[in-house]
Structures are given as C-alpha cells and as structure tokens.
Image (tube, rainbow, N blue to C red; front, top):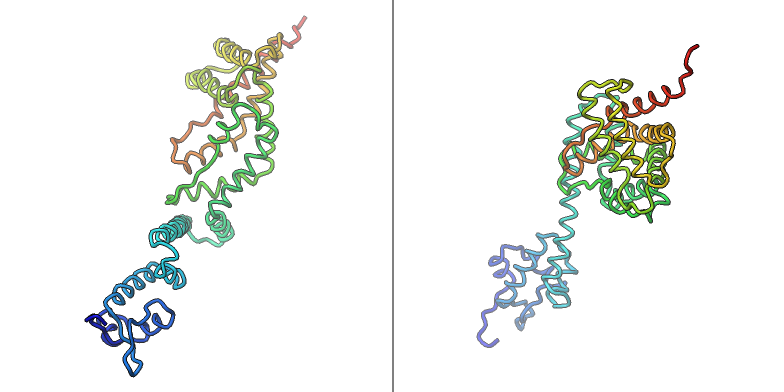
Length: 325
C-alpha cells in the first residue's frame, strides 16, 4: 500500500511489548483495526497502529474504560475532555484515600482496648462521609440553630464563621476533631440551646444594628472582663463596679430603645444572656472548629462569662437586700 511498511500481528506484538492475544482483542473491538490483510486473510498493521496501541495502553493504565477509549480514537470526544473528566474523578479518589489514611492513623493512635471498638466504628463512619454528606449534616445543624433568622443581616457571616471545612488532606487530629464535632452537630439539646441563644441575641439587636450580635457581645465580655479575671478581682467587690458599668453600658447601646430604664432590670437581662452563652459545648464547638479549619485555637470565654454573670447577679442581690432594723 503506497510503499508503507506493514507488520504482522506477531511483529506488532514485539514492537509494542503486548501479547498477540491482546492486540487481537483490540483489533476485534475496533480499537486497533488492521491496515490490510494478506490474500490468505492474515492481518497486517501500519505505523499508525503502533501509535494507536501506545495511546490505548496509556489510557488503560490511567484507568479509562475501553468504550471511552474507542470514542476518543473515533474522535467522538476529544482526548483533553476525557483527560479532564478522568483527572476530576482521580481527585475525588485521592481525597477519599487521604481521609481514610488519616482515619486509620487516628485509630492507631487511640489504641485497641475492647471498650473503644464501638467508638472507632462510629469514628470510621463519620470520618468517611462524603463531602456532600458532611455538608448536609452541617447545613442541617446550622439550619436548626438559626431557624427563623435567615433574614437577619448577620446571618450569612455568622453561619460562614461556624462552618467546618475538612481539608482534602486532613491530619489525624483534624479527623478526630471532625468526628467529635459531628457528634455535637447531632446533639438536639445543644441545637436547642444555640437556637435559643441566637434568637434572644437577635431580638436584642437594635433595629439599625446590622452587626453579628453574639460576636460583639462576646468580644465585649472578653475585652472588659478578662483583665479583671486575670487580676483576681472578686465579682462582688467594689473593684468590679467599673467593669460591670462598662459592660452594662455596652449592652444598653446594643439594645438601643429596647434597653430597660431600670439598671437592675438591665443587669438581670444581661446576666440571663451571658448565662445562656456560657454553655461548655459552645467552647468545645469553637475549639473543634478551629482545629478542623486550621484556625488559631480560641481562648475559652467560660471564666469571663462566669465572672460577669456572678458580678451582675451580685449587684441584683445587693439591691433587693432588706436592711436589718
């Protein structure tokens, strides 16, 4: 054929390193059809057959199925499109394998006592959830916590700041943190507590205040109360009065026209809000979230919240004390 060198199936096998059986199979399925046949019916292959076999072998080694390879060779789809699709599929497999490796590493670190078998099984189940399943679990939790508050100006920012994002290649401690957080996400009492806190703090927000109230109230407690705690100021001492006044004034500004005119009532309302915020599971959630998302570990707000509640309650008790005759 126009002087082209043709090879027998045996010669083609030697040139490509494949078996005669494999080349015959490729020919029968139309992947590498013979260029010509001898008068006796024996197959002969041209130089293009060598190139096609090399491409078929490469794509098969990458895990691409024969039907897709046939479409590429027949130019029904482009090779770049197939490569992109396959690369995306491999990315998913790599993420799953990395997460499973982290799960196994975390399990090894926990030891192998009989009491831990059930916990490890749960850990494996939660850690191996797909990205879509994890997203559903998180969205379900945040949807319950902020139910009825989707129109709040701070809704998007607050939910974003509370969303765990497990990386593609997590460390064992991130897997452990995710498993612990996933259990918290399914704690219905914790959901109800956070929902009540979010609802009450949203109610407290002044109509013209579009900021994230839980954050600004927590920041005020941290900034104004933490120094008093660190300096050993007793919450019921006169030295605590300036701190209580500053915190109450800040809260009154948040409330705006809703602020009670009675100082004792303002103290009681603020104490109720801070007491509600002082749930150890809230600190636990934020600490686990920081590990998963690779954020700096947050300082616990519990000491400052406890101090502030005691200081506010102490002043309420002092005002209602009946003087002895």
